[in-house]
Length: 592
Image (spheres, one colour):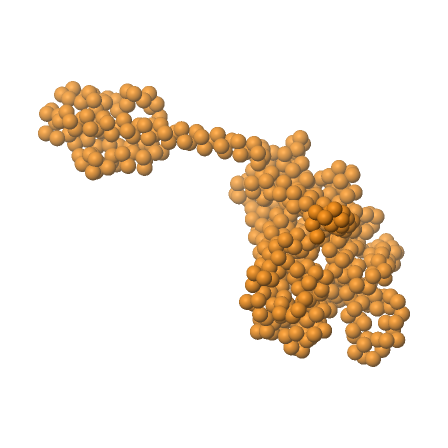
């Protein structure tokens, strides 16, 4: 009679054994799982099969003492056992055992590699988490926002109800997107034209990735700070002061002021050009614009006076109308520009110069700045790390798509004009002055530029007021604020106004400085330093959330490298180091 064994396998290496015991190699073997409720009795090792029956113990390969493999073989055997079948079965089991051993060795090697990688990337100690239920996802939010609503009952009594105000991902993403889309978009074509559309689009996507990581790090720091203090509404400057040494905190504050002042210089400069154009159209431009600085003064006074005299709700309503105009004019530019752009020439290899793309990074980074509202997003979404991550990714992706479309339309409409993509040429001014793409497109570009500069300046005035009140420890409302209000507005507007007088065409240069040094220091250097110290430093302070950016130290180091390279390269360029060595090498005849 033939042997008809049944294999009952309990091992994580099921596939290996199934491959070994194929029906083609041993037709008389069937493979199945042993049920926990099975009362089947077992016999001993197959090499001992015969008339003797051991029904008390499972099969254990005598050559492999590792009983954890839990390989149990049950067999119903006739007294006339086929010796050849027993031998074949023993050989197959030996082969499967060798495969199991190899698999275990591979698993051990993988564990060793993972251990080495964890040493490189850094290991986060989960024991430091003060609220494990938040890390595990059992509880999503760190705190709850409560709004109070008064209701009048039928008997005339007024009661106050406490309502949960959780905020929404869509609303937070809209806030991020609205903050990101500013006047920096006006400088993008100038920065990206020399390198070409494809290299500059790649640079813009890389900048988006770094700036998104930066925002997630700031969100992580904000949540942990809320958990430490029990207080919401933590601003950027407070994060720098609480997480950095005194010296680095001063660097952060200085970078914050530098960035805001540099951008405001650019906005006032560009706004003065808008005022000059308007005065020329009404016929009084020659008499007023002839006075040095009058255009800048009129624009700064108009926007600053609106913020100074208007109530916050009134300024918000005006700003909303202007933002609606920005969106409408942008859609008009895209709709009209697509029909007149030469996209084949735009992506032609002859118009791509990747060697020049490094100079585009400062404006790319500056155009994607939104980090000042991340603490607000954290508060609105109650510290819910999943919702915050979604809102930041979505809120920055929308501007990225808009910027890519904007660049394609603007550059695509001027790419066929001689020298239109030269370094230093403003494609937007060229588009407006030459009437490329039609008069209607030129008008849409002008309206979009004017509204974008105005709305952006309003936001930066508020940002500077918050920074100054925080620096001088002043309230943001009330009698004391009103006493200091004139000086605060003068501190916010007077320095950028004076700098704009020195060079009326400083718009692009000021934004470039802000992106190269202000954005790099504020959002690409300091947040990784703070996150590194918080995660891997000597301090064992409890934390509220685990890291919101994966891969440990790798993205932190990547941000440092990107920022350091950009600062050094742009610093050397602004100081004329590259030009000096170029002239020196040319004199030596090393290259022409």
